[in-house]
Image 1 (cartoon, rainbow, N blue to C red):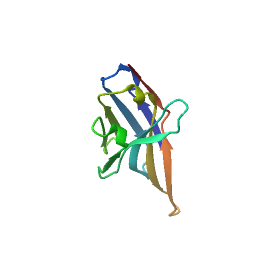
Image 2: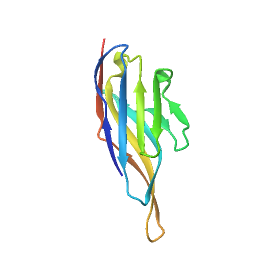
Image 3: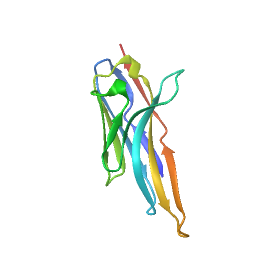
Image 4: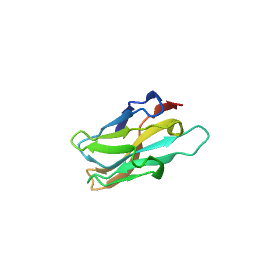
Length: 124
């Protein structure tokens, strides 16, 4: 499974950005939960939002009401709509996806995959 994130950039406080993460997987892999994490300079990576294959979502408290995660299961793509951005939202945003792969010998492999990160900078 390969993930490609896009949509980061520079925006003023109060502005909006939409991040997109497209996944490419083989026919024997199934994408399960997908999410967005972020890492600000000097800080640990944190979960921003996550969405299950069935559409159940959860959010970091500080982004509730401002960010919306959604997904297109047919395209294995996850989105993060970010509104009312604040300078403290500045970080590298990483998408991730959990997959289940069914091998020919009957083995089931579950893995977490990460995208390359996209930088979001919010100016005050």
